[in-house]
Length: 118
Image (cartoon, rainbow, N blue to C red):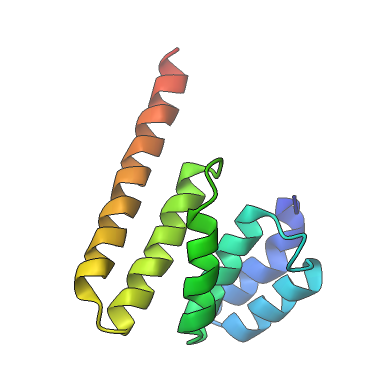
């Protein structure tokens, strides 16, 4: 997994709205076959921002089929899917993915609160 410090350049590019450079930096850090799930999530989000709906959707669908993925990363993949569906006119499917993302986020919050209490 990439360390948070190694992703600083990518975060700075995203913060400034330079999604193309952020994706270029991300690609320089990983091989598509070796990418970790969190990096794939970032890649799907960047592809969406750059207008590559097909690529973003394909990658988000792949991520969403990963059973062991962190719930927040899975929620982000569903958010990408929701936006892709919305942009292609599939509003009901978009709502379904947004509901899944919302449910995953709520579940992740409950789990983290439960951990703090135990």
